[in-house]
Image (cartoon, rainbow, N blue to C red; front, side, top):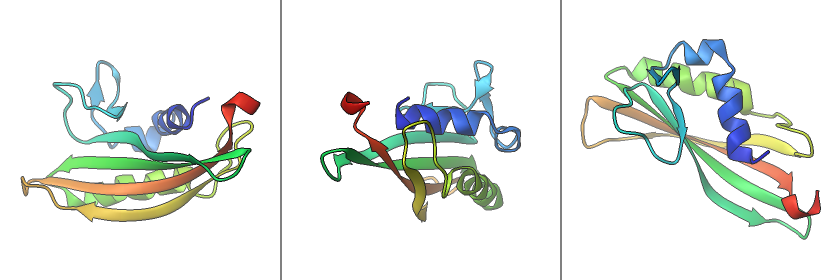
Amino acid sequence: MHPLDWVQSELEADAELTSMLSTYQGYPAIVQEVVPDGMQMPYIIIRSEADVPSNDLINDMLVSIDVYVEEDRLLVRQIGDRIEKLLDMTIPFPHCISCVRAGRYPIEQPDPSVKMENLKFKIRYPREDLI
């Protein structure tokens, strides 16, 4: 399983988190890389910032999770707290080594009504060509 797919499946499986999000085409508003037209806030975007080998056997992926909410700074924090609880200090999927929090940052938006926070996680996993 690809690390981004694991992150998305973990977030989508959590009823507490998904209750704080909008839905899009019947699914929780959690996407990878690009937000589709028509998706309403609050939503989550998952993307890879880097995926580099740390040695001959292990890759380190820096996963960035962006939380977007309209008007409600408290809801942004609650969503971020829940994501941290679900992902930090876990062993994500078979053959994976670890997932740890690497930072959390509020990001100012040009539209002051949009509240956004960025969370980063480092996932260590074996090279897929060796499994």
